[in-house]
Image (cartoon, rainbow, N blue to C red):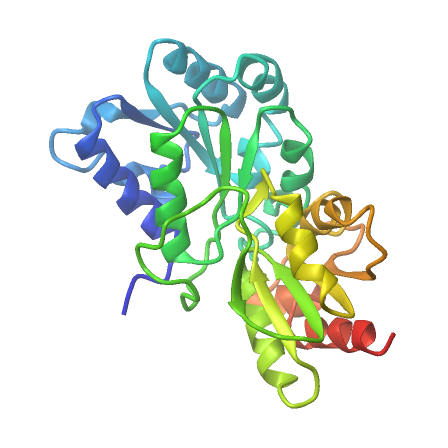
Length: 311
């Protein structure tokens, strides 16, 4: 069985890429053992390719910008709530305006760091990075797609953000599939309702479609690229059904739901959001507990699908 943990694959892929490209460097903000960026440091002969920046994400992103100016390809890693939130000004002013070739990793994204509570859970990172001009925002569905996206990031120019889950779960995308930015991917065909999902919610959407089989025909679409996002593809996958549901481990304000609604703004197609309401996360005993508490389950998606199907 292929590796099921996104952050493990993230670290393994960085090691592989560092072997192939001497210009790739990895920066961590005191969390390299968790983001798995430190895998590069323990690889023989690559010790200097990993830079420990301490608990200082703003300095880390400023340094990453300088490295990019010098021709390097920096991957700057921390928990999503810190890599994006603490360094927003540096990302906007020093990286995005100049279109610098900086790659940002938001690890332990969403509420996947279930034990540490609201301070360590990113419910808003997609929204405030998606709005920055020149920034690309990627949310892999599983470990397989994480590897594909990291490889794409390393080989293409420009500022990019990848959102990485902390916990292992089954892969739903094939190994070694090509990542095409902007393009949603149909994982299951259906004729009644289309569910657009990203991250762990792709798995939940597939489970919901199984639950509703024979009752509602559900098309499940993986959206790993929140920005860019091909508007024509979203419209095409929405016009031949009764309506659409979006599912994300993020606030319903400004995330995948917002991106899909924007794409459908000229269409008369009903849209229902499954995501985190206008609130922070919370500490929990397990990942499943926090997902259930926040309404991020297959059952919640199934309810939204049935609501749209009944219109």
